[in-house]
Image (spheres, rainbow, N blue to C red):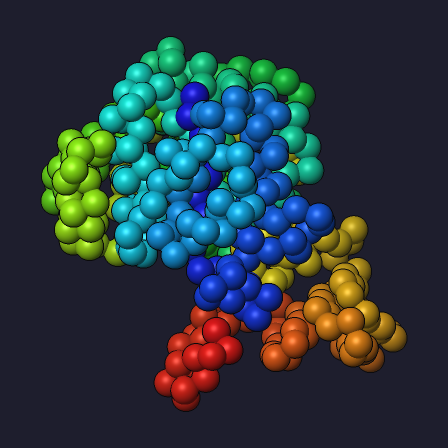
Length: 361
């Protein structure tokens, strides 16, 4: 199986830790390795390094080479511009279909923490077997631990097989987009709804077939790109066709349209945490929800449910009697944000552009 790690996004919701020229996937926010390096190290334990590919934007190529110096250059899939996840996944499918048409491919994202890697590795190996034996799409889901309104859900049906204590094969019943709080509470009580980390495994030709069915224009462009790969026309065709692709997510364009018969689910209790935004960074680092999570030179008194992140060595970041906040200090920005409002950081960045503060992005 070929593993594709996607790390081309700007990570706006991680601002001001992540910036336009150095987004979150290249930051060492969870330890001595960056998020990208951690994800690469994890999958390298279970798959050969020559089978691991990185999908990223052209502007991040040098950062990829610097952080993963042993990664073969031919294993870097470069998007000429940002066109959202549908275009990125489609390009990777075309790229791998050209070279490995009969090998399953796994779609993974870099901004996640897995605390039980052996469980994750077992699930990936099981998914590979399922695809090789005829399953069109295999999705990996994780148990919901709270009524979270910021995540998409997968609804699973009957249990097909209990593979291990932590990995269960279930029928696929469909996707549910980010719910409101009341719905999220009902999902948690129901027990058949799981968080969707966005991981799926399929043959590249199966992914391309879904584009053919649901986005024929993009499919035609992807086939032109695939045919040009390895020829003198590759760069010109890639740039010409890629910019025509609509900006849309792979979920909305393709995956949400899969029928129950076209997919199956592996529920995997692998200690999964999203690190895509500041409140989820706190969740990944905390021992309990009430904790004050501190990084850098910080102190607090009578505060709760707080992220204090200080990037300056010669300045103390202090908090007294506050809660439910993410407070981040860098050498040029101080951000104070309610944890339930981190999604609005993207709107803040748009406002900064209109007020000529782009140099802080």
